[in-house]
Image (cartoon, rainbow, N blue to C red; front, top):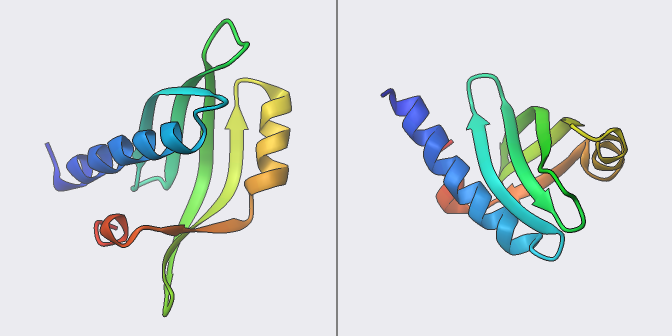
Length: 107
């Protein structure tokens, strides 16, 4: 197993825990995958009121560092539900989000 895949696995576990804590009122993230080589993230979640899990992917992201810290810029979303793809792209695409310093050190 490569260092990159170990790092991606650790970050995937951390992201799953973060998302489950932050968005628990909407459902549960069942699994999460980060691929730093292709700059892609994906997850499967069971949303409240849905009978089957949905798939969501950040098709492209970029990591930025400046004097304030490390940030992720989410560029493009896709999902297994067209309405969800539209919602995610309109709310989150093109925005940057701070990455905790412990995670930023892994990047």
